[in-house]
Image 1 (spheres, chains in turn red, cyan):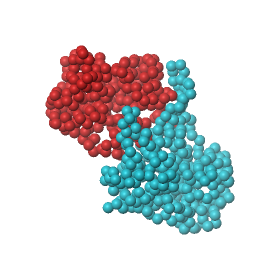
Image 2 (cartoon, each protein chain N blue to C red):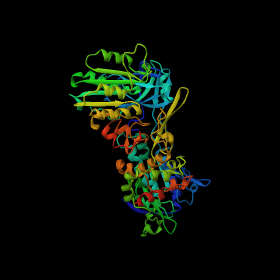
Image 3 (spheres, chains in turn brown, purple):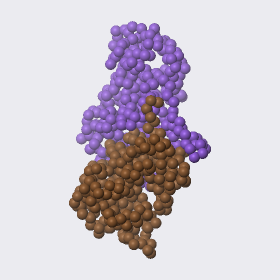
Image 4 (cartoon, chains in turn blue, yellow):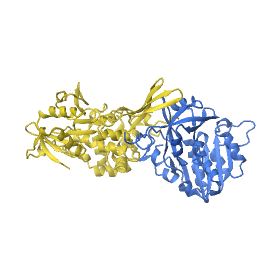
Length: 279
Length: 338
């Protein structure tokens, strides 16, 4: 065939596996072919199709920042056939990766702005990519605030990084767990993300809010953001939908006439308000 | 654009097949299997179904197979070797209808916008269409309502129309068509001065397409409409499988120990699993929403994004629906709603 096969994945070697939380792991992946690795570029917010040969593909964001080339990371919860098979992989084994796909967070347009990240549970990975991206270019942004909650202390992902971020003086971080999810030595907040957000009362002027979490968290967080004065144009999220091709052909991820894989996954709340509730 | 008009004698079809085969092409033509007719590889014109309005499945599979390998892989210790497909065999589809021929451009619009699907494109490039125009139609046919006609030339390389003598008036439409004539110029005689029109089926326009496409965006929120229209829908997906323009697909792996294949398979937005998340959440949990997606995608979204309709009016979905849902009736109802 004269043109390359767009469904052929890069071969990636699992360089490091981190256990994040019960059933949640992070893989650090390096390109088997150095040349492919050197050419590979992506931007914050993009995703890929990760595959276990013999089991199939699954859609996950790229959780590492583009400011750290040479590798990518993905964080996943063992839930279905492919993530189940991924979880069984060991360091040194090879998996497939197609990408990067989808649009990006417009970080270039956010220079000189405050960034407010709000995440829940397993939805921190797509924002973690942006957080590290911003921290690696720290002087381009003003205040950076992260509000992150999970059901329990055990369910928090990137525990080491949360500690690392808390120790840095250049960002503010609030971690919270649902009531009953705390441990005796838990020092963070106790309560749901929307309540913690309201209490934190971040300023909305010159601030971009990035929200990612389970549907119920998003549903209850958006009204709080509106109350705090955040406009729909300055409120960003990243959608997920069942996907197969990732490149606007297979039809699975359509929301109205839009493809989450091509027109998203990053949308502003203003854009979401125009979409039918098919996500 | 017609390059030239010729006459192909009825008994020359067999000879043409022989010449095409000698040129290394496989020939797919309508072949009866019980009451159904499918496009299958034929060795002789005598194997073809004699009298049919429409085949059961469209010839879509020639360029977009029901199941196809995207690539194969072999595990060698910790290493993985990937093997891509070889070039497809040159293929001639004979006896498809003008509506079928028109569907190739629709499929192509999906496979070659943005990312280029090399596998589809090389299959399409290697495929030639010798279409036979329709002398008969039934109540399910509605090509004329969606921009086609029983003698439409869109998408065909040669269009044959059976005239009074039983011979074919051959319109050579493309370079691919011309190349086939060049293989056997002696079979193509001078064309009679007859006009094909009088031999074509009459398919009345059944709804106002402009009104339909104008009304759909607003109809989206009319839950009652979609509920009522889809009450009978079983979610079996037959409509998508017989459709020449349905292009949605699934990707699945199949493996045996160390070797395997990544497959692309036809899929349907009528299936509840089509949108189901691993978490259990389903953005289209009920059948009426899935039916709405089918209609909206074909007659509104496709129109907007691809500048094509996702329908050629072949009527197969309504002929084959086990619950007797008739797309045409439903489109008419939407177009004529106040």
